[in-house]
Image 1 (cartoon, rainbow, N blue to C red):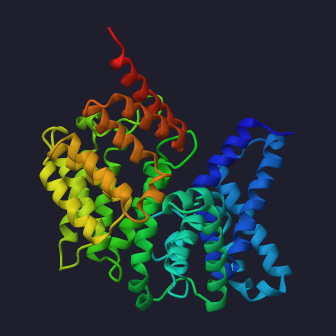
Image 2: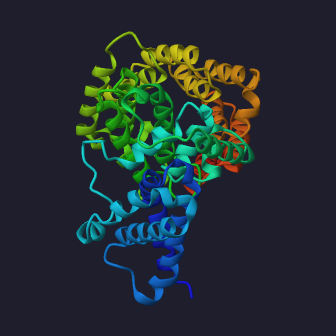
Image 3: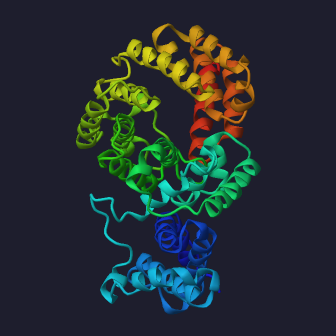
Length: 430
């Protein structure tokens, strides 16, 4: 017997809690046992689906899942010879007390010393694991992202990502990686950790699939972990502060990111008075600390771009020349077709529609750019916008249709379809 309400709740808890539980298990079982940790969490979720429809949903479902997973892990280390060397760690963890078990996962505080997710992030980003594979594994285990979501983050094929995950787990086993990393090991792994958090926040800010454009829990978790990294003596580099600033600038706009039905609201239609002034102020504090030293990263430049939007009273009064200059620096530092698409918007705002279209044509013609952009709906949506501004309505409509076909989620598809209808309506004879 299945209960749609219970199924929806378990799916929700999987997205919000699975990464935390896997990270806690991996810290006790070791990163070589990531598959075991993931299986234990799956078992707990299946048990919830089987028992909650009959016994009722517990008062604290997340704590229930955590407790069941912990007990299952304890059974495994007592019976499985390959895990027996972890028995003392798991038993000590299980004996933290009935009160702690009732509360579920430990409370999150400012100190990262006991933060399981952060510890697992640094384990996944061990130098024995190729960087893209380590980042993919961290997104899966800590962020709870699926293979398809990770593939879209990298603009890669799902089969490629699946192979990377298998290789990453094998490398962790072979290298005998420990959790947590020592202070001396943290600095070298931090760039890959920052990349992981950047991609995790992006998935939360603009979900690559499903019925919700924004996944606030992913944004909140990415911000939390980024601020922990930025606040640590061994990892608080200018790049870490720049990434924290970038995330906070965007997080400040989350409430205006969607309308009442969850569809996208573009920057020019957002009520800037409703942006979170506290988060914006915090972002500027991190941005100030990011200016220390001579290091310049993509996070610095993207945070600078976000800061111009935060300071501007409207889209029209934004310092678009400064934004374009930052994009010009960004394209040299971290070239990417996606960056070129965003830069084209700034080109259009500074020079005009034809210049924006020329910039988009150049990136589409560049080596490797066309293949990646063929799967990127916002390339076609951006080009459609500037085609319409240039008075080329038929071409714009064709691009909006192509963008709709590629739309990764229901909200994006509805938004693009609405733009297409508005374009057609405006072109219809009065």
